[in-house]
Image: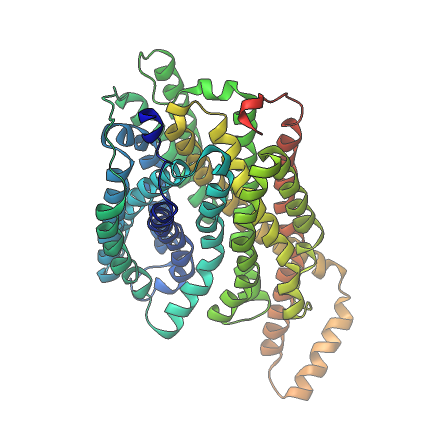
Length: 512
């Protein structure tokens, strides 16, 4: 009986609700900030006296820092407890947000974004672990459904909030708004979150950490620079790729020859865990993150909406992410995580393959918003069952590592996804522009431009510039079809691993 009383989920409903709200608010704040900042970065070239390549480091530095911090999070949790690490993460995130908002130079804001990214990693892993522990085994799907509100809903909501704050207040408000929320979280978390008593003194493999961290830096910087310099036209990108490859190989050698490993790869011997990670990597990372990036661009640059109105349009499908995340959790508890993942994959792939590619300039705004709703439902159904699948297939003492691996693959997959979306968007725009010019009748176009010149009373150079801009815009418009289609292909690839879940026979105790 005393043993049962020590179970973390042996708490009242009121306590469970309070703990969950505190933890979820932290996770929501952290992940929301990622996409909110994405919206304002293009507007910072003037205030920070930089160009687009410079301000892009505001995003890159954050992602690199968060990815590296993930590698040390498991050690910190077992050494100091989830509550302490969570509160430290919120405190670092809040203080860094304050200084990001007061920064006047690019160097300053990059420095504080690095600290902010470190805090975000601590928040995400600990909040994930804590909310999972507050619910009994038969309600763990619901727990992850609630957590999915933050992980899936926040990135889609980011453009709305970022657009509103930037348009009606100031870009600094994007950072300042985190400060009072963070301070309130630290205070409430310190007072109310349950204390932990059992800590472990672990041996930390600093050599493996350094090598994997270095490999991660090279990889993420390569993805960022590859978008700017061209993947196959820059020596710098090639050097970064080779450096990342060498660092990963050295890390593998370090792990093979170390008594204490940084990551326990025996987790991947379980086919459900291994396939769950691949589903997470390809569907959430490679595919979904492309749409997180592409849909705001579509509304702003193809539908010509102001930033805030584009955010409202994105909010149309974000609402359904929020509605269906808890539903997916409940469904996981009822029919099992595998079946729920399969349903999510069918809805997601169907929407991304059949509906989203139909969006273009001529699609009425209301219709465009309605077409994204099934996509939002698919996203809402996805997160909870995959997380339950992974955590139920990891040993109890490896829950922290399972979450670390999930978030690490999310960061790396999301970076690849964003880079792919940017590259595909540019490539298909140029391809359609080239095809458009090849199909044109030169004499007819020249005659048409001459008539326009006479009717409008402006120079032929101005007419050619207007016509060229129109051609480029329509190329961009038509290129979105191909870009959306390519994003859906990664979802199809991820679905292959969903099929593999049904090839292996699950253990009954896992309830999957």
